[in-house]
Length: 252
Ligand code: NAP
Image (cartoon, rainbow, N blue to C red; front, side):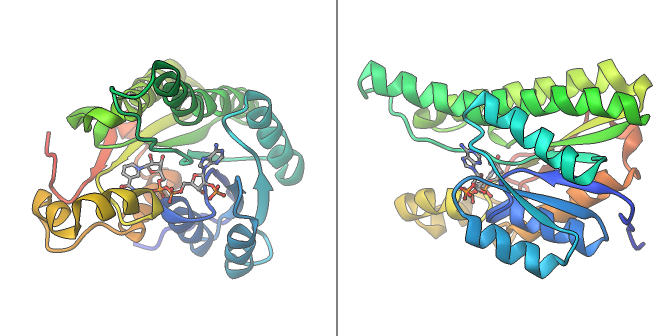
């Protein structure tokens, strides 16, 4: 089955690299007009936009700042006129040991919650308002296996932020379905990106490979097709669901 996203427009946050870049590329390949959001990596975001084609555009914002989340949404709507799908993908995984100074530990929590939970919430709120004037739209939030399985002690804030994102998504699905607004979680397991590299460096590839049921580690391109599928409308009746993409490392 060929998925055709022409006549749709999509905002993908954190699309300068990793999972977000793979999602943006797959959306573009399916015909969507893609807003590629980045924080620092303008060159990578621009190169991706050039690959996707003339309709793709790049947008900068530091999503740890509430006002920049709002400005990002407004900039995309101003350029595109209409957004059909919001993909909240940008995220951070900050290590913050229990033994660290309280101030540092709290700073890790604050940044993690701001980027991984508050920013998606702000963008969801703005998207819902926009979708209500358009007859509907879709939200796809990139959560994590950590929301369900839990994570290592230095990543308590990370797991908690992703658990919050799951609950946020489910609540939107239940609250706004009658308005034609659908909301989904995609929950990757360990996926080979810059974010995962620190863990790979620390524990080694064999450790990670031993944790999964498949023969190779998950790549960003293994996640992207699920997001394209959900954006297409073919999965609308599973609104509120979570799609696990974790190579069988946590089956629930
Ligand atoms: P990544 O390679 O580290 O890329 C992170 C992306 O988020 C980059 O585009 C980055 O922008 C952006 N970003 C980071 N902090 C930001 C901020 N303050 N404001 C705006 N943008 C910011 O990450 P990834 O592995 O692809 O992860 C993507 C999503 O999947 C995240 O939500 C992550 O939690 C989730 N996930 C990943 C894994 C995994 O194993 N990789 C597993 C489960 C879930 P710049 O590069 O431009 O700064």
